[in-house]
Length: 247
Image 1 (cartoon, helix red, strand yellow):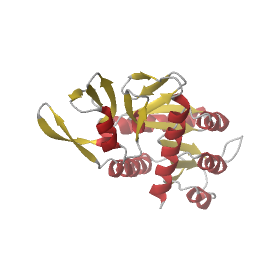
Image 2 (cartoon, one colour):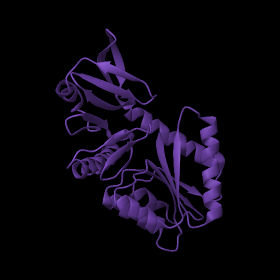
Image 3 (spheres, helix red, strand yellow):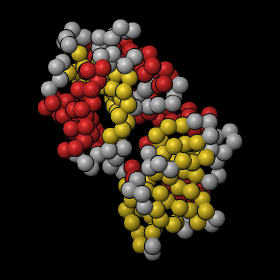
């Protein structure tokens, strides 16, 4: 799932952009988009500052009453936001500023479908390249090559561990949680939560002090003291991922 935010102070423009994204999704059913709309850039900045929402991709208008979109983007980067940014604007005046904050694309309104679709293609290709990692696990008596990006979480169930996958399937692993974490600890996206869980940060939809809500719909209850370090790891992971991709 890809979390996509749109921020524009004009409702009509929000509607147009959202419809283009829905059109893209109809043509690419293998990708799932979850779209969130913001009409006020301060609202966007606040939810990211609170670490309660972290979009993978942000479509951001430049000319807004509260501040320029490029200034908002700089604040987001300073806060550690790793989301890719596509600027939407009625002028090319701020193109240089846009790329100073590592913008993925700069599109001049009215937005052409082909231009936005090409930008989304570019974003998805970069995401795909990041996903090319695998793990070898013994499942049902056979060694299987599992894409790391498809592993959502692992849960301790006695002496066995349950592996949950992005497609909704699950499998039982006859390994200890310690052994599994040793295999996964080399990858920044996997974090241990308490004694019973390993979670892939890429699949966290939202966090609160009680639960980690995963993009599969599964909620994981956070043990006492787990929320703050998990929130910090989640935020730090996206900061470092973005910095590495910009190098």
